[in-house]
Image 1: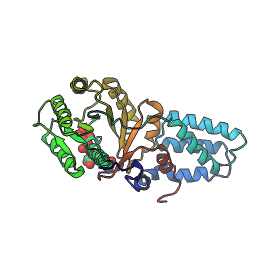
Image 2: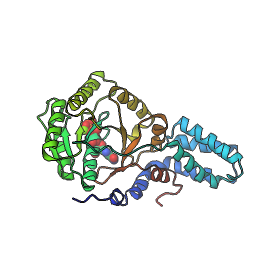
Image 3: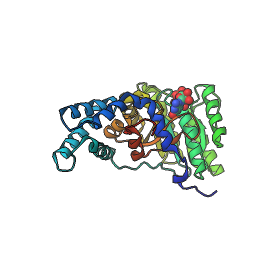
Image 4: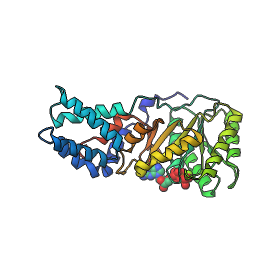
Length: 316
Ligand SMILES: Nc1nc2c(ncn2[C@@H]2O[C@H](COP(=O)(O)OP(=O)(O)OP(=O)(O)O)[C@@H](O)[C@H]2O)c(=O)[nH]1
Ligand SMILES: [Mg+2]
């Protein structure tokens, strides 16, 4: 099958992304209009800008840094008015997001993507959407139902497999997650599938026994391929806001993460959280989700994200 260029997939996604942020943006967008519509850059401007960035959940550190940066720029010759400051702010925030590789590692025989996160963050839904995206790119993903705690979790992944038209390897409820992962990789080798995407049970990051179970899955995978898992993706719910940084740190320490997926950006009043996550953690955001439909996931694009976040008008 010919590989479709990534850019032609998910057409209109970023437009929908911007719209899906509207509900949450109401919390701060009116303030943004006021801040950037002020007649002059004065003490009130700085106070209001700070409050607005905090309201968007950009985090204290990012807010402080970009405001310092803007103050320096305003002290220079070029930045003269609040209206101009919006463009500067966008550029400064883009710098905050540091250029880093957001590519998914999909080279392997097969590449193995292990998907982890706390309960209900959106792991299974993300896997369904990602399988669809990768299949449309001409790849042949295979899903592994390694959340074996509940029969419903296995059925849910099978349903996503049907929707995305990809195969699912599953055992009985209660089976060993490592054994499911092992079989899935073997099946992918036999059938020429790539990548294998492994669904895992939601777990509170504070449960060390459950973290050990993840490490066991990783050890099983490494017996098959020392480079596996090629990606360990933590799925975060955008509604959780600042607390997700702590979740990420614990998962990072327990098993090592290669990327983050921020889901449920639709309607979240904390969409700015991506800024604080990116600034505080070394793990890059690689994917974003904006709903429960097959095409509601895309590779993360910092510029598109900032355009949507800082849009000063509703519905444009
Ligand atoms: N609005 C919205 N809902 C989402 C999104 N992603 C997932 N959901 C919903 O969130 C709920 C939990 O999603 P799951 O994919 O089952 O989450 P999970 O992390 O697999 O959950 P556990 O396996 O129980 O830990 C479901 O009702 C999903 O439909 C999203 O991007 N936007
Ligand atoms: Mg699940």
